[in-house]
Length: 374
Image (tube, rainbow, N blue to C red; front, side, top):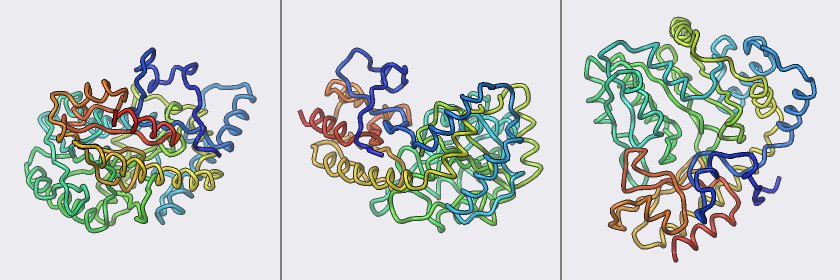
């Protein structure tokens, strides 16, 4: 695999490229990569299409995909899960909205960390619930949760659910064992459920482990863990993810709220997930090495630009850039005027920041730096 390729995505109506179509602005925003899928995934999709029959397929009947998830969790995280714990969902966004419906009542409060993925920030209000934000803070050159604020938020009797990202989006931190222990202690002390969005968990660039929330002994019966092959293997457009819910009552409540609203995942998404988790380890390792080099290059160059600074993300292909030093009214307009289209920090709850996607050819990053320095 040549991760330095720059495929033409214009014909496919890719969302990332459609936004700035007809301009000279380089899109570096939405969180998918510019990497062609691994050949085993493409072969599996070709085989599925060649079959010629794309009728209804109950995901629970796709034992190959289910077994692939079970084996992946064992191999990647040393986490032994039971196949019955898996609930297939057409994306983590519907999944955490379903979690809110399943585990919250009218008048409840949902806790979310900020900055965060915009659909996650929007989810409580969409479901007519209150939202309390817990800041992400810098400690010793690393972003982490404000645990004192989390404790205070969880102590509110109306707080019933905490939705977090691990690895964190957009800051890229990976929770340590001590940090996950603290989350567990706070949530259990105040009887707060945890929904952990772990969609970037297979994109860890540093030598740190990923610790799934529902693998934690204190959280196993009180949490939902959301995962997918989508970000890692660039198959987000196939609309397939999964929730892992060890507690049978919580799983039943979750399934209950999907009825009549949440569709089954696609047959192509199941085929891609199965192939990704079974046959793409070498591609995955090459991707991680390329992303790490991209991160190091981009981080070094961004920190040379007056008014900009960033902390190295331990995971993801996203760089969270502090532009407060620019002293400009609108950081997004400043970037676009330079010819760069990042994700606006204001959408994540931090107007003086922007998020750059480095899941692309190094050539694009060189172009981006040249534009920002001009």
